[in-house]
Length: 400
Image (cartoon, rainbow, N blue to C red; front, side, top):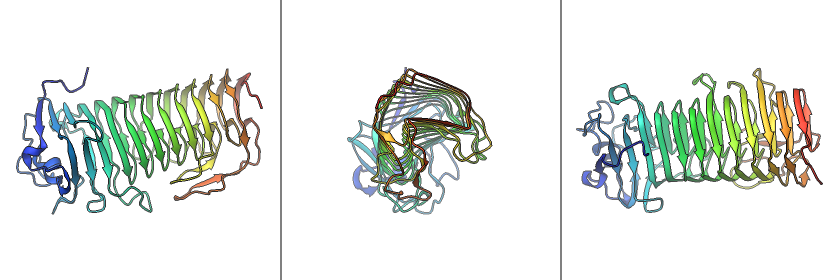
């Protein structure tokens, strides 16, 4: 069942001055007047509706440019529970974030103890785009969609395209679902989870990202919680500027039945970083990986060693990587190795099909972003294991 019921109160943004012609600045209507009484830039928050009842912010077919909010310098946000942002479908309803005019603008929904603590939120049936798709650095503007401290959310049938940073930045949320979304042409990550629990990422398409397609992280200085109980299933990830699917600072993660094609670095990777926690109990099963490390065009932020699959503490950070099962995956053409294991414990590899061919050495393109580089490992074993204990390899099924 939808988290926001069908009989929710519907607030049509066009009743509050939104034009939806792609030219007029609809920011005040969409981000403010449709939901707040006497909107004063989030200094005081008085909802226009009963915050104890469900409400839908409805954007009829059109393109709603969200430009500057004159005199208001705070990031716009919706602090509501039982709250849905809904359009008439991707490509029919577009929220155009004018990051040139207003670098702080984003669609942001977060918990607030005054309004139900972020329970039951949804975004569905629209496109969210940016006017600043390819800035020179990661900090020139905001992400497109930001979710924080929510408990129970659904993201369904949403297209996110042309963003200066991350498409979906999800921080400290629980019990959420991403389904039927299309993310493409982002400067950094597609779907980015930090310190989240009980999340399903299913049946999405992520294409042409500057960094990871899907990333699961946690345990850093500003969010000490690991991401946990995450399922990444039946997604199509293509042409990513770092890894296709990346895990850093997480536990109890299942990555299953995904198609990953064309990555600058690894196809599916467990790779600890500084300032993040370790990784425990990950299953990587029945995925199909092709052209890992062989994507060499577009925005390329990632740095490291390319391979098809990796469980590799390449930076020798002081965290544990413990308990990874890699089974029944098919890895086609990729760079350096089908599988790299380094600095890990208790890794089981069984029933995989490693098809090839392997391409040794670094990419000719050393990247377009800060810190990007495809490094040469110096060894090109089909399955490379070093500095690890408890590694069991049961017929990886490699054939030349």
